[in-house]
Image (cartoon, rainbow, N blue to C red; front, side):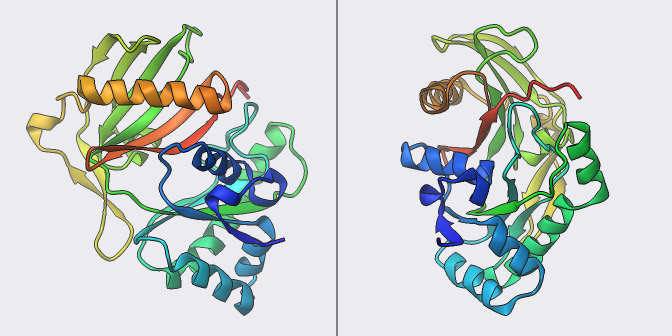
Length: 272
């Protein structure tokens, strides 16, 4: 079995992890996923151990991807309905070149085996040692990004709940800003628009890594999504439901007028 595959060929979650397989399914369904590769748990562990052959394989197969890169964990039991591991496993954005992938992959492997991650696993009833796959994708330079629920996570209403902010979506996911909040019904009609407080945007730095930039005063409370973009997101929600089923938690980004799917997972039901 190949230990590094294009995302569209990743099918086995026990080998490549749930995130990679979910993005693979999206790619095969024609959803707008940035190009990337999936690394198996076995080769990730080999890279983390410093095995030169594994490192050279990963670097060689990543060389065709447009730069810079985003590197994310994809454990076998990650992003499920019972446990999301949100905030437990490291994500590294704006890795400037394939030659720096080995260090990024090693850091992600260690984050998944950290004391806090293991404690989280035990709290949600997972007691086996994690198999940690990795997803490597081209990093977008989005104008706006955020999250979307295809079903209201607070009351179960059959409507889309969308939160967005300027720049990379990590500002929303990490709670760095108060994002704009939208509710859209299944027919695409906007039910609610609530401006947030978006004082910073996370942007990629030229030499790698990210920085929090101050948002111009006029944009702090200006809505980051217009009607056309909300319609695009509503259509993406419908397509994700057709591929994955109901009650999805989506990460998205809009770059140069194009909407991209970054992740689509089941809404986490566990409150533990």
